[in-house]
Amino acid sequence: MNGLRDIHEPLPPGWWPPAPGWWLVALVLAVVLAWGLRRAWRQRRRMAPYRAARRRLAVLERHRAAGEIGPRAFADAANALLKGLLVEVEHRADAVRASGDAWLALLHERCRDAAFTGAAGRLFGNDRFRRTPDGDAAELAALLRRTLDRLGPPPPERPEA
Image (cartoon, rainbow, N blue to C red; front, side, top):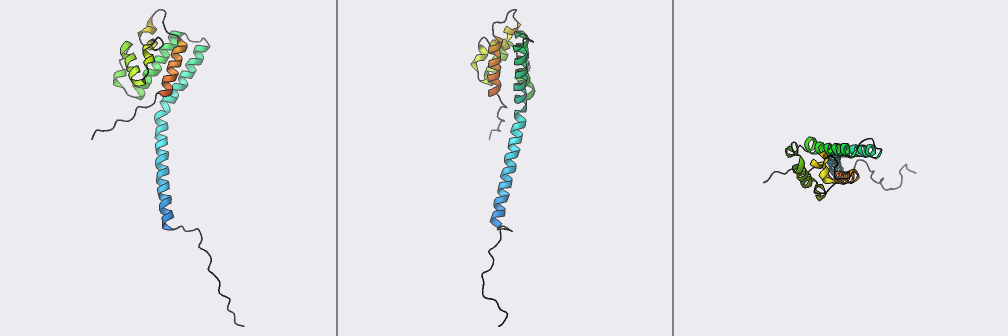
């Protein structure tokens, strides 16, 4: 006999190297993933001051509940918390010197909450300087918590075409 073997089929193609179409799919997926991660990172960084404000509010509420600070001190600290967000984080020039009714109107406009004209919300204005403030610190805390839950960075301004 001669040393020839019988006819046989070739091995099926392996998975490596992939076809050019798979390289294109991998490239598109890598670009989309990088874009999504960058966007999520930027959003997380933009939201960091608002998360920090929520944590500071939780600390303030614990101090108020423990009786370590009174209603006036709580109102002052809550007001400073909102003022800091609008001035230092959002860079609102109109919030720098706003006080009293102008501050309440600005809060109403920015936070889209009519409660800033109610008894609890008025504690952010001049009512906190009264001998006996009209509002309740618990209502003020609830208003501030609700406001911080809704508040976030304003949408970026788009240039007009």
